[in-house]
Every structure is written in C-alpha cells, then in structure tokens.
Amino acid sequence: MNKISFVYFDVGGVVIQDYSDTNKWEVMKSELGATGDLSHRFEVIFRQYNDRLIMGSITVDDLLKIIAKDLHLSIPPDFSMLDYFVDHFDKNTYIWPIIKQAQTRTKIGLLTDQYSGMLDQIKAKKLLPPVDWDVIVDSSVEKVKKPMLEIYSLASIKANVQPSEILFIDNSQTNIDSAKRAGWQTYLYDSSDYKKSSQKLAQFFHFSGI
Image 1: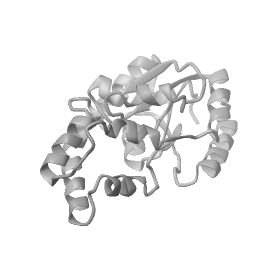
Image 2: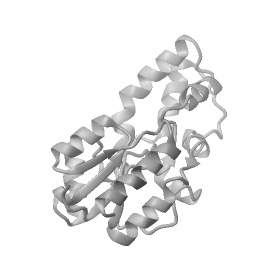
Image 3: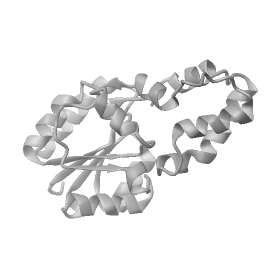
C-alpha cells in the first residue's frame, strides 16, 4: 500500500448518519403529501434538479416550492425542507475516535456533495466530530460534484499532496470508482451498518499505519 498523507471523508453516510440505507426519504415525501402517483412525480422532478441542487445553483427550499406548485401540495409557509433534512440526520459516533486517531497521523478533510447551506446547519447542530478539518470541499460552494473528476482534482490541489497519497472514504461505489480514476486510494464504507463498518475501518487504518 502506498503512503497515506491525507484522508478525505464523505459526510452523509460516513461521518454522519443521513438518509442512506433508510426509509427516511419515503417518510418525508409521505409527510409532505406526496403519496401514490405523486410520490413518483416528486421523485422525477427532484432528480431533474439534483445536479443543480448539489452544485448550489438552486436551494432545496426553492425546489420544494416548484414541486409543491407542480403537484398541488399544501406545504406550510414556514416549512423548510433543508431544516427537515438536517433535523433527521444523526451523529455517527462510531467513527469519531477513528477520525481523531487519523488526525494524529495525517491531515484530514471532508469531500462532500451538499445542498446550499446544509453543511453549515450540520455543523451548527454539532453532528460532526469535534476536530479541525484541514480542508473542506463542499460541492455547493465549489460548483462541482462527485463523481466528476474535476472535484477530485480540486481536492488534490487543496490537500497539497500527491493524488496517490490521498485516501478517500465514501459509501458510494460510483464515487469510489471515480476517485480511483483520479489516482487516489479508496475505502468503501457500508452505511447500512455504521458500527460494523467503523470497526472494519479502524482495522484498515491500523494495518495502513494510520
């Protein structure tokens, strides 16, 4: 294994418990009144805007207004979809000691696809471990997203190390494959079992000298 000088962690599904491998998305749509055929139509519209959401050209609350108008949903005027998302995220405390240990051996950062304002709210709710990240690459700020190779190139520059010395931990095989093409080392984290996945990651770090 090559030397590891920098570790990038994904946020949703790795550093925090988001909607990955849960039914929270379906529950949210149901609570918004998007059931039956409306659920499918909600999904279609959301997918159409997904890249723009992640690259910060539209907010998730503005998108909800578009969806509500199209599907004739009665959304309370003070409802925030962004708030709803973050309110239903949880800490992944299983990974906290691993991140803290990694920080003693190497530089660490976040490489994450986020909606505008979401990462700030995640920080405000103290869902992230109490560490100082050396680099944060937020898709909504940088206007580029995973799995586009451009985001890995940008993250390599910000890390200020050779791509071959970067380890990336993500719960998406697509994102992992793209990172490999960028010359990075990778680790696929299983967000269906945070405790077991964190135990395996700790073992991986041990054998990697992190």
